[in-house]
Image (tube, rainbow, N blue to C red; front, side, top):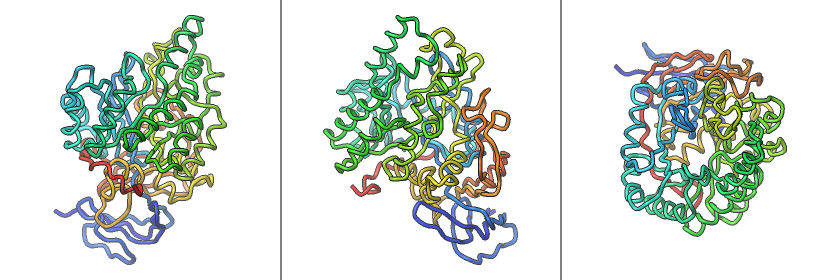
Length: 467
């Protein structure tokens, strides 16, 4: 039987337009937009009078059920996507990270097994490349054919995930040949290793030294080097979780030169600072992530970069670890603290309050930052990331009159703390809709495990960015 949903009387905000219209969805797709659409018998009808309708959020940077630093992140594809849905996100892109010597196809199969039948919203995969050799390069066309059109290279985590400049050049060349996009974790791994060894030798082992061992200069240098290498290879580049002005300036300079360099930042870099490392004792381990939190003066620079289009999107780098029993593994040695924070359920709400309601972003820029640009970058647009006839009926409908507060008490993350505890929220999602089904209503999950479908993504299209 045909399933239809009609959303009446709403104001719709896309990345480019603002308009009033009713939305009719049939079998998960938007089939009509316009005034005065009348319901038929059996339609699900939502009255959105006084509410704001946006494309459903896309978090293009998550790590669910990830083995990392001797622990496994507790949010899997069920709990992570339920949290995403309750927070206004209707699609995620997670990272397949192969083991050394593992075939890329085998790693993809393992990630499909993690997600199959569990995800509450739609999901896609990126492919990380912790090693680069002839066999890996030969596997890239097959990976792209499976709808994984983005590859991540690490310039940090020496001895584990880090690749060198020659290997990065090889990946950039192979990706260009296959119309794929390379993302980089931009930190100078040699600088980090040097500092880690120094602090360990000096007995400086508290979590506050994690930030000092990951200085902004290391991120700026790596961003510069990655941009130069991408320019040399004639390939587009994407920088993940950009955290500081040193790296942002490199992106800005490249774009002014006419080079196609794209970048994301994260809520933690827009809203939290390295002061959290200085006043919380070992509890500072809750915010140990890479890159770390930066000096507060970086925040306005990042907000401006987002507003001005040098940063295209806001993702989370969601990689949750419990403070008890997992982060605590690093007591006495900050190098053993599992890196990462929970955030997939908070991203859209935080961007709405501290971006839109605080006047830093227009509502159209908000739509671009939470959904549209990620959809364009990662081969999901216009199926996702906009409100248009033919697009998936993925929507987040905000009630600007509702207030709330971020807290572990009401979080759907499967961890024992909130990275944004106490942040006030001015406006909350009333309804979150995934392919024409309400999956969350005022923070309560109303969807079902297994609703999410795998997203076979298109190849990277430079024309989306005027190149």
